[in-house]
Length: 328
Image 1 (spheres, helix red, strand yellow):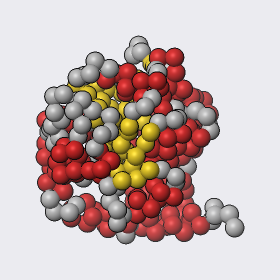
Image 2 (spheres, rainbow, N blue to C red; image 1 turned 180 degrees about the vertical axis):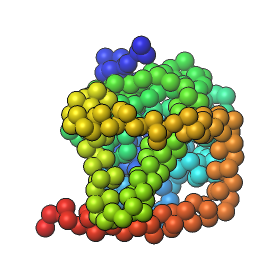
Image 3 (cartoon, helix red, strand yellow; image 1 turned 30 degrees about the vertical axis):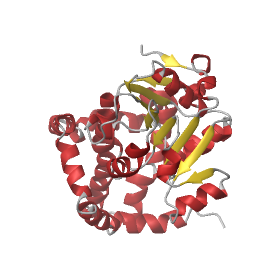
Image 4 (spheres, rainbow, N blue to C red; image 1 turned 60 degrees about the vertical axis):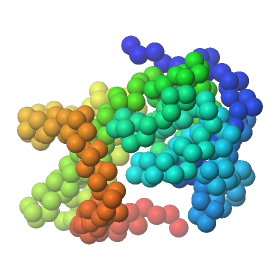
């Protein structure tokens, strides 16, 4: 069993008096900066002076500076920018201003694993990856708890890299829930696989295939939406709360028998073969190469796919059905 770290395993004292620069103020950046600030840390947000993030961070009561100024003198530099932005910002604004012996912290292992950023040898390189969107990181912290996180150490120049990572995780509230140790490659590749094959790619493809099957068979679009999409959250909540068996125990016997005896017709040998290929493409660097090329054309292909997705019937029907649940 992997060791799970809790509050008693982490010491915020290692960060007392240290300057922390949070580069990026989006989903994760804002949540993490606010949590660390409320945990008593000296936080400066690095942002563009003409960007929305600058005003937002100021309105939130945080110290804000342009990225080079935020990095200069910082003991910990947290790079919480989108993957496609990190290499350029690191090269232009972070690397030239990085203090000797500073710790570089990431929330995702992509840039380090696929060598898009090469830190100097005299820096700690660590990761704290909350397993939740930023909004939930902040919400659970405010509620007095936290979300689970992963930590990793790629480079331990100071001899205290792991302690710093645990302290940052504690500052986010994660040690109340539990922190697991991994490495950059394991986190990056497993995260990409989960997103592509299951959580984002797999689930949406399954929903759309189910919806299209019912529509082609003559079912009303609204009925199809309820049966293959609307109720999905109920099932996921049951699984998250108590595992697969909790879900099976909570649905009808008809649903359980039908699900257990028919699911292999949907996720079959061909599906598993495709999943294996997705993982191979991730581990070999093929996906990273494809994705970084997409950056050079301003995400042209992805934007086209987004437009195609937004125009599908299931999206149009969903917008109307969700209005039924709006409270005036």
